Image (cartoon, rainbow, N blue to C red; front, side, top):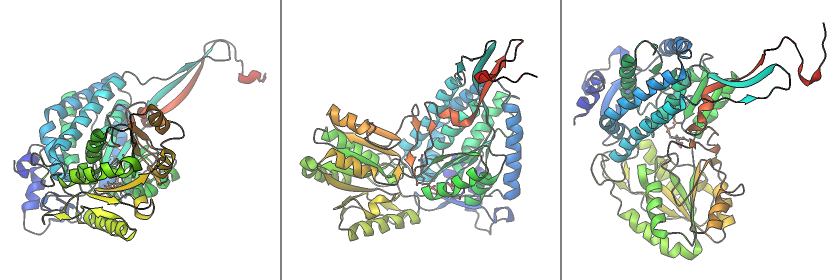
Amino acid sequence: MDISDLLGRFGLQDCAAAARSSTAQSPALKDGLVVETPIDGSPIARLAADDADGVAAKIAAAQAAFARWRLVPAPRRGEFVRMLGETLRARKEDLGRLVSIECGKILSEGLGEVQEMIDVCDFAVGLSRQLYGLTMPSERPGHHMREMWHPLGPVAVISAFNFPVAVWSWNAALALVCGNSCLWKPSEKTPLVALAVQALADETAARFGDDAPAGLSQVVIGGREAGERLVDDARVALVSATGSTRMGREVGPRVAARFARSLLELGGNNAGVICPSADLDLALRAVCFSAAGTAGQRCTTLRRLFVHEKIYRDLVPKLKKAYAGLSVGNPLEEGVLVGPLIDQGAYERMHYALDRARSQGGKIAGGERVGDAGYYVRPAIAEMPAHEGIVMEETFAPILYVFRYSRLDEAIAMQNSTAQGLSSCIFTRDVQEAERFLSAGGSDCGIANVNIGPSGAEIGGAFGGEKETGGGRESGADAWKAYMRRQTQTVNYSADLPLAQGVKFDV
Ligand code: NAD
């Protein structure tokens, strides 16, 4: 299908037409965005960006929407999210394809990302009847105490290019049932999918009726400056920002300076340990998916692998063989497993990292460019003599650093020695090893898996990581609490006024 037809299905045909136009940019587009598909680097759309006044107007609309939406009963808010999930189910094919075209992940992963949106909508619908607080006994006669969770305010979602729609839904589905309005600033590399989702949210709101106020869900188009406007605006109660640690280092203190809340989901440098007792076939398949899948562009991508010395010589050649057989190419084609890197900058950073790995004595297999349109690469394996230097950094590309270890404690210590703390895994059939890895003295990451790679999380658990990954939690479990304010309430239903702790103050 032609990209214009696909965009037309979301009412975005004008953006595609603007990209085809060979005339100079219209004044409205002067400071706008040109969207290129990483599939071949060609421009597929042009969009106007929101200027300062535009962002301010959207924040005002979000604030007005919040004032109404917070009073709509939570189960009714859940009904809105249920209808949004239904809309997404009906439009999964189109949206999944657009995700693949705009960010370059293979179609199965583009569709999987939309499925993740549907799953989190289902989760949030149930949650809309379970925003439970506590009751607690009061020490004073004729009193009761309880805890209530109230809506928080407009929530800004700033998202990264590599999960261009799922991350919004992890936040928005929860934020909406919690009674908040949402402002979404997608990556400047993937604004089209955001506008497509917004079209589906608008369509859902029209079916839902008057209870859904105008401005309940909005998209802000632009780069870093547009994000900064949301970060600095006192009307935005929570900034949920997903992206690099560099971005989080800027956003966190700015939000804290105005005593608002931030939820940071930042970079990872994820590791896996393969023990001698592991099912090596299973481990090999898991490593290929989590290290080479999505062309190494997941926050949870496996980047460092610790292989026990007893199995190193068996496993690593098999891994290299599997890597050499991975089909790299157009992500829309059946059978392709590795699509392109997002852009030239990503390609250059990959080569910089490989050069450094080589200079540190690493033995590299793969990493070469494939074709000359777009930035396709063969995933690389770097056998490293020491765990230091470049391996301590997140390079957002398919490079797997491999190390030999002899003692599990040593492997866990190396794993935990990076600044990031997102995801981790161990492959073993030995329950003592598995439990050691999961214990308080084991992995220090937000996610720890056994016999599964570090990527591909389900929505039911709270997602996020420690240390320079930012500490935020999104999606399942009790992550919803970040989107609400907690109020402790004490009610005196007696005619007396006893004071707590037995204090006397008679007037
Ligand atoms: P990025 O940091 O370049 O951009 C992310 C978003 O932040 C974009 O929308 C960008 O416009 C915005 N932004 C950048 N600087 C900003 C600032 N000062 N103020 C406000 N907004 C700002 O990241 P990217 O290249 O799009 O994505 C890749 C990175 O994201 C990797 O580091 C990856 O690990 C991380 N990531 C983390 C998670 C997670 O859940 N932990 C998920 C996906 C991606």
